[in-house]
Amino acid sequence: MYDMLSALGKSIYFPKEGILSQSAEAKAKAKKFNATIGIAIENGQPMHLKVIQDTLSTYNPKDIYEYAPPAGKPELRTAWRKKMLEENPAIGSKLIGNPIVTNALTHGLSIAADLFADAGDAVIIPDKNWENYELTFEIRRGAQIVNYPLYTNAMKFNSAGLRDALLAQKSKGKAIVVLNFPNNPTGYTPNAQEGREITAAIKEAAEAGINVVVLTDDAYFGLFFEDSMHESIFGQLADLHPRVLAVKIDGATKEEYVWGFRVGFITYAGQSEALLAALEQKTMGIIRATISSGPHPSQTFVLHALNSPEFNQQKLEKYEIMKGRANRTKAILDSGKFDDVWDYYPFNSGYFMCLKLKTVDAESVRVQLLNQHGVGTIALGETDLRVAFSCIEESNLEELFNLIYQSVKELETVSAQ
Image (tube, rainbow, N blue to C red; front, side, top):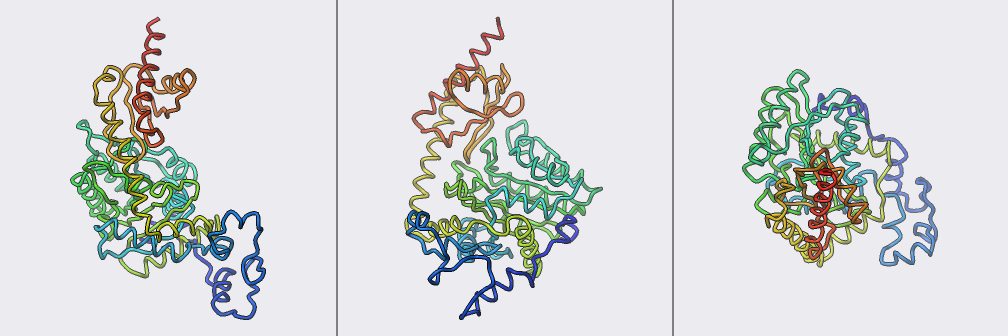
């Protein structure tokens, strides 16, 4: 595990005798006066402005104005762990750490990049991926992005491609794998058999002597609409092999529809409590050295939601809306009336789907849609157009795809002239 760490990961630590640790000790014992931490107290509670508190009157000032601990609000970490174990039965009794709060998922990925990625290290991701991986791993840390095709010719997850990309790193002895399900941009989650094939590919690489750090980017966790895996592959990876370190990166951002709250989590699996404690201390060191700690109010808001008796029912209601949009999108695309201009990549989950255009390039369609019809989409490469059905009312989806089709036809006409 030590060999998996970057140079920064090896050297970073959380100060045991610094301001935060002394302040924590004082908070527990300084009953008369506590003159340690850099906040202001008035009438026995954190000083605050009425114009702010008036909009947050449901909450006690101590739960929103004070600094949150670097690892996050303890009650929130406990609640998220409980939720994670309930929703991912494959974890079972496997040894995992307590989730550490991050400033949403991008921050969690950035922490993982700092801890594990050095210049030249291979970061293996499919060819259809979230573009921020390049910034996080390649630009910030100097790692080398290694792509493999996401789909086979049969439009299944390409576990053989993942395996080949992994085994190609044997001379380096180390690889970082990012698994993002549901996938952004395609909305694809592997089925159970494909999940076992992914796990087997990673195990084969470990048995070949490659240290493998596997990051499960579970940003859209829970939004599984069809016959796919309905839990994170982290559970299968948690005790896979001594050379495999599984790291789960998730959050309330998309799961609880609180994008602007910026509350995420990073959770490690490991062979010993000592290892997990060391990784937690190093993670806290990265947090201390960058943002110091995450925002306290949003952690309190998420904790309040998780503890609410209405939470599960309200979340189910939103899930059904999202599932309805996904199913309606698939029904529209399967109608046959667009087959002359595009195919679509398999999707079964998440927020997105991707069209594969046949006759015109994706950027031209994106610009035509935007300028002529006031419709926004995302062009990815020459052929792929990402559509976020998540933000379109179900009743408007058919009109959306009709306008995309119309734009393609308009461009075909211009091209013919």
